[in-house]
Length: 170
Image (cartoon, rainbow, N blue to C red; front, side, top):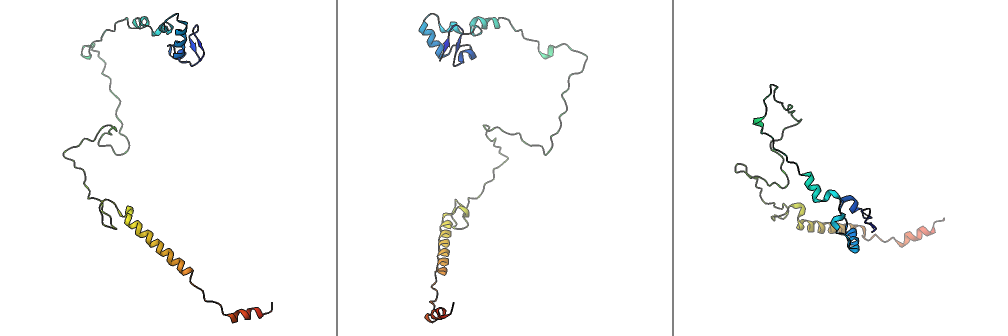
């Protein structure tokens, strides 16, 4: 990185953006060993600038009950327009908010899932491994029946029919 201590610049641009010397500038300052790195910081990062900014006191104002009374009416907020659609009954909760359980509302309790195919608890017919195995066996049996129907031996042609075919003029 290229560092210019006179112009307070570095090619990484950290020094120009923040007003504090970057690690490249600090290493070059230490190499020259003439000043401390704090002396190369921007003026508005010094304690003198901080003290100048906060040297004035901010006095508290009187409470609303001590304000001066006027004859004009108090400001009124604009009327609330109802939103279209059915109004929501409860507020929407954030993700980090847990459910607030009440003693009057009960959660529905469902019976455990039971498979309609094998009758076991814990899965349904769609995810039943026994049904998948039986379906696979049925499919292979059907494929074997189709292959057996295709590969049936055909009756051998008679030798006399072959002779007749060859004797016909072309």
